[in-house]
Amino acid sequence: MSEVNIVESAKLKDKGYTAVLGFAGAGFVANTALMFIARNKGLKEVANVKSIHIPPLVLLFDGKQTSCFRIYCDEERKLLFLVTESMIPAEGSYIIGKSLTDWLKRKGVSEVIALEGLPFSAVSSDGKLFEFSTVPRDTPRAGGTPVREGAISGLNACMLEECVEHGIPWTSIFVPTSRLASMDYGASADAVDAMNRLFKLGVDPTPLRRSDDAVKKAMADQQKRPGGFSKLLKK
Image (tube, rainbow, N blue to C red; front, side, top):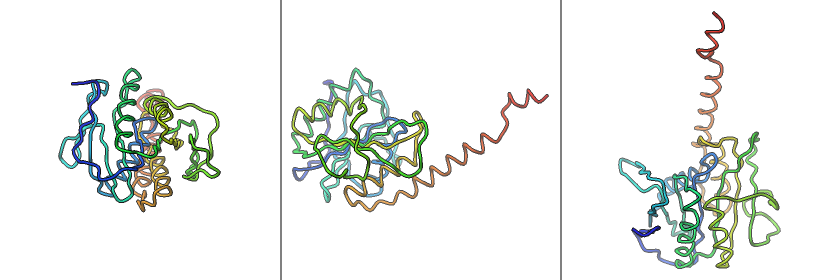
């Protein structure tokens, strides 16, 4: 097997797609949001990505095994969703990023948008987003605050550099999250809202917010219960 294989299961019907990236990262915001949209809209998987640089992970969806790195297509809105639940290690990011960007270029992709969780120690619940674009705009498209300083890392950074080299417009949408290693359903709902504003998807993120409320309630209940160590101190 070569270092990166993009295995197509269906042919794209047209050119001029917008690619949206949803890679695993802080709060698992991006991949959770895109998978929620893909399942809500019944999007078809058109390809998967195999590589020796992707940590081995097989997912189970609807009783079937599937790749951890998938590409979905929304023909109506000419969208491609690139989604992975695996954390891509730094040593594999460049070769995977270049292979993906080359593939997108061959498919005639006209723009790339990257969703990304932005780690914050404290996050308000107003759904405030931040945006960066290689194309100057008077008004951020997803309703966020323009970012002039910061950093982009990992696979997104590699693909950003490749897109600039190929002249493909790039936009990063940063969604604040206070979680790093666990799922932030509330931030994922904010990301879905951003996608709705961008592409008029009409996807209701309420189930994600209910999951977020349930997680917060469970955490609050756990904090109220004295742990074993606290019980020992009281004896």
